[in-house]
Length: 291
Image 1: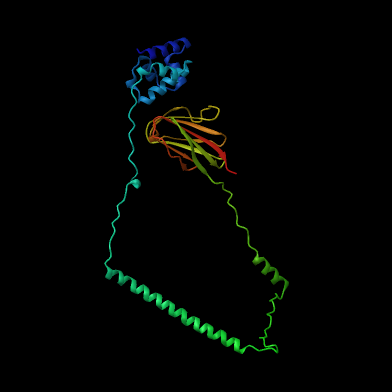
Image 2: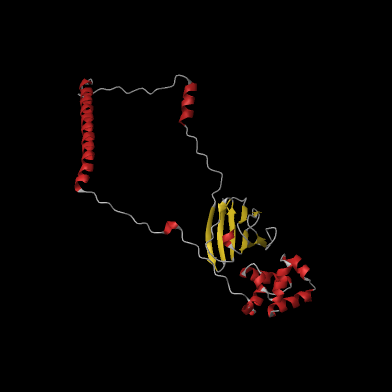
């Protein structure tokens, strides 16, 4: 039996708890609790779960888990290496081949364009000629007044013959104001990253639904600003297991995630991307309702 396991077992006995009682309090299987007391860490699912289970055990018997882990850190197993994910293919460099065109081929491409441009200029010149000729003809046929100026008659404004027609014309001239979208805009941004914790800012609708989906085993815990559990209980979620949390009445949510690569977070159908590749890590989302 390890010194850490002995210390935890003494505290459990002092509280009057059996292993069955402690299993009900922590939701950790009895065989894992016995393994912690015996110092048999090889039976645990992984290095992260050893530390997580010890913290829960310590909290249940009134001890400080962080201090115990620091004091008996020589008994803890070494951290498992985190597999590096391959870089996305979009970041790879792309080579471009530059083709050179022979001078004769370049001339063959330019000549048709020049001919088309000359044809357009010719058409414009003909149009301008006929327009100028018709304008001069209209000026010559206009009556001349005694003072030598050209007389003209002011066109009378068209007045609707009936009041109803005037009202319809006025209504058609009015432009209806564009309807503004009543749906508030959703904005999700990273506020800061500190140690194992990444903090996001959410601005959007007051009704918020967070979906947690697991593709493999991972520890999951979710609490609000009052440290109240939001999920059905801190636990290890298994593959194909999902849980939806209503966050409409909370100011922020704090998620503790064991293996991030097995957990997908979706808030109001918007996927939350991990900015750190850490096992474990904390995700904190602060909410602000959109105006």
